[in-house]
Length: 255
Image (cartoon, rainbow, N blue to C red; front, side):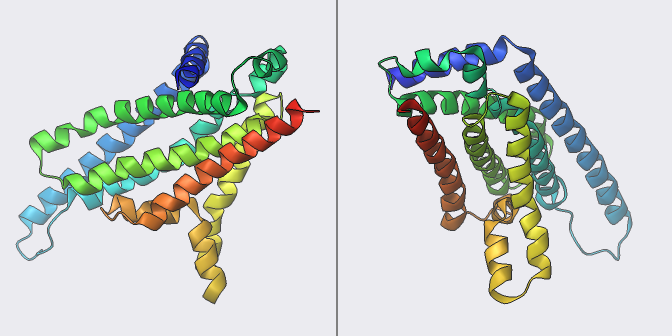
């Protein structure tokens, strides 16, 4: 575990020694703040209209009207931003010629992969924590349900973990960071589009395509529903990415 943490610290130092981490986090936090305040403004205007209309019996719900759409917007932003974080994890080692030195060290391939992946997860966690700061005030001035809120952020973290696992795999295949980012984005986009295709399919194909889609599993969490199948889905994708990365590096290491 000490070796994993040492590699993670090295990766974090490299992240913050270049502008990419700052740019990704800044864009994510700014966009999340923009969407949050836009949704709060819309929620307030709807609440005022309903309060002025005595015939309108439906109650406004901040979880459904603010947090659920906010989480869905943030999930799309993660799809766009995280390939930029994962693209350098192994591609940079190959480009700089330090890959051989890394693999001849006494640290195992598993520890190297775990350390790099841990560093990217910590960046993801920091992004989510920063985006959550403005939303905390809704608990001070409003009365949102905490469970959908917490599960929404848990879903974003699991979604991001799956994205980073896939990005780590593509980064291990090429020394070109742009190619790695494009391949990661293309893969994530494919699994996003599966849900649209699933709506037009019928029978078994519809069930299969909907199950494979990243965002179908995320929807329940934004509504406060925690299903073990959703947890298994995201963790399976993350571990699949790590397994493929390990297989790729091991095959290259013993050539």
